[in-house]
Image (cartoon, rainbow, N blue to C red; front, side):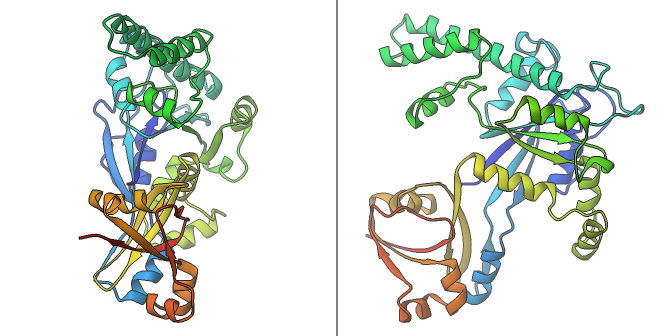
Length: 356
């Protein structure tokens, strides 16, 4: 599994420009008018990993397969979207399909690019998005509770929905008490429960230290993950070759691309780890939730591996790279035999043994 991230925001905040930069493509039309994006643009990006590069080289693998992240550029939201304004319902349905949300807000002034509300106020923009998502969730829960009269929900599920509706009515986003509750609420399509990253789109001069707009966002949302990006600069960076890119980034004092920042924050936000498989045929990265047991991790490779799991042979990628091969790791006592209760760690190189 990789993960799917939806880029949402008001019209003309730079969503399509950011999407083009992140996916190194020109798939999304970027223009100075609302609803430029009507159908969502989708781009799949490899999560480059130097550890996998080394493993593939040492194993002399015929193929190298990175894990990936999918970005979805979703049409701009406006006030009243939950009631069908703008591209309302279509916008909201597209958000339901993603694992996490990038809330992109405009944090720069420009006479050339219009703002749908005629003022630059990232906090107001975020509140508009939050309000429309909450109103959509209220409507969804009310419809679910209406259907509950037909005995389509269990008593516990009805109780959960009533509690969440009470919070939404107060203007609060939904918080799940545990994984089981999260899965239930996510499966019925609640939007406010989705984890999010706030991305502040700034001008070039504000990229290194932010500006008055980014400070407002940080103060108002102190517990949220916040990333500062200049979508125009990102677009320029992704149009260069590797050597030109490194030189350009050094010249402007940028040590990490926006893509790398978002991947790191996204993995942290969704509690994801990466493990590897490596051999002469293929070296590959796989993504799992933190604290995943070995049989469940094996099922990511093939669903039958979980029920037919015998054991896992595990070594850290650091030891694999240090000693040069799985065989050398075994010879030096670095290869471990792990059972069904083993919790997979980030960076593990795993060899699963299963019943045929």
